[in-house]
Image: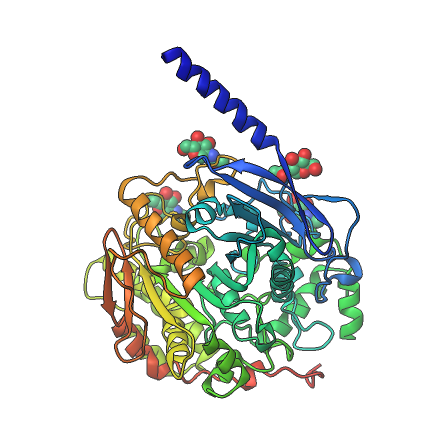
Length: 577
Ligand SMILES: *[C@@H]1O[C@H](CO)[C@@H](O)[C@H](O)[C@H]1NC(C)=O
Ligand SMILES: *[C@@H]1O[C@H](CO)[C@@H](O)[C@H](O)[C@H]1NC(C)=O
Ligand SMILES: *[C@@H]1O[C@H](CO)[C@@H](O)[C@H](O)[C@H]1NC(C)=O
Ligand SMILES: *[C@@H]1O[C@H](CO)[C@@H](O)[C@H](O)[C@H]1NC(C)=O
């Protein structure tokens, strides 16, 4: 008996090995793609993987700082057995993608198909857009196996250009910027045109992403020419907000930075950008390294190589367009199903945002505490100066609001609250309200409160809550050592249950517009402005109302003042040059 099962097991190992090595071909209208079959470690089922499919021509040389060009048809089989290059980026400790090979030729995507490749399946499709502050990250880190198998959906993940190479923006036709967003748009067009060959349904596509990926999917949702490319959106810990786009003044400053760090000195902007096309990408990355170019007497939240008003994807600030419910942008946004949420303390980014030199200058250590003096002078002051014309009323009310009478730990957590406010929370409420007024698509909000057994970002002892990015591994959990340490975590017990639940809800939303976890579970009610219902995701799931109410109320009046017109005016000429 024992011998027999031993034999059977030997046999199954042999079979698995054979299957592992098996190539699979998919015919697309561009040519044949040759992928591989892998075995899901949890269920033993097959997943068909197509890694590193090129969707855009190399954006190099003359193509640098230009919209991407779709790939040409090919002869023979395209080898999709290994991942493509990550886009060039400065590797940092906390989002370590260092073992990935980088190349400027990086417009690749990955497709994972569960069980069968039959084009009769018509599975819903989920396209993941990674985060990393528009300066780092890659599709490779995220293993969609669980989502594909348990959700029975086709999972696609995409690379897009990052940093200066993806977002050099001069508010001028010499370089309009947003190349990384154009890459995403081209990848979404590829999915629309070809995913049927992989058993996917182009009429049921959900785009989802976290942090800069969440901001990306919500930006794509405000571009009316994307109509038909996707139908549902999940923006995790990042949406379009009043403070997201780089102001014209900050963007134009990059000209000086690049002139002083390269041989390109032309005053004519077309000549200048042309010269930059032939500077080694490593030189450009070093010249624009945000970790070394930030000031040392305050935090800096605006780095110039990010999304802008470009006169094309965004004729003006997208929040301005949302103010008009009849604009094409508003109408398109509301036609989509929209789910968004945050973790219970997005401010876990704070140790990385307050640089050591800043801590030295203000004489404190983030690991120990953040004094209220720094909250006022180092955080609020520069923010109010930039976005509220230095309004002293906003500054003083903010100082008071973020000063705690409690312990030193309470005070430090208020600093994290403020950071979460500056980057995340009020924008979420604003987008939800825009979406759910006169809407046609469904609207859902969540908060992720489950404490992770392995937080994505290391946090100080005083830190309370679930931090930025902590929900990602519940969707993309992996035990695959080949992946990077970022997602290398085995969830067990209640964490695995929460993960299974989330995968069911996320994929259910993608398939049906309703994020259901089955009949026996709590029905997740839609968000509407009056009741502001959201799902709290913890060891238990519960419905609650009015997330972060005090914070949102405090800022709701003051937040409306930032100028969304003059500071973001795209023009074909620079009067000031
Ligand atoms: C990086 O590229 C080299 C040379 O092409 C290759 O041998 C190596 O496996 C690649 N590494 C990764 C992690 O893909
Ligand atoms: C960029 O900076 C790194 C670290 O200082 C250095 O090792 C590398 O050679 C630089 N690359 C270029 C192209 O200057
Ligand atoms: C800050 O405090 C931590 C923990 O006590 C310590 O490891 C670190 O070296 C300190 N950093 C500085 C810059 O003093
Ligand atoms: C992933 O985690 C396992 C178990 O902790 C460890 O042995 C392995 O080295 C890790 N892999 C990577 C790439 O960090």
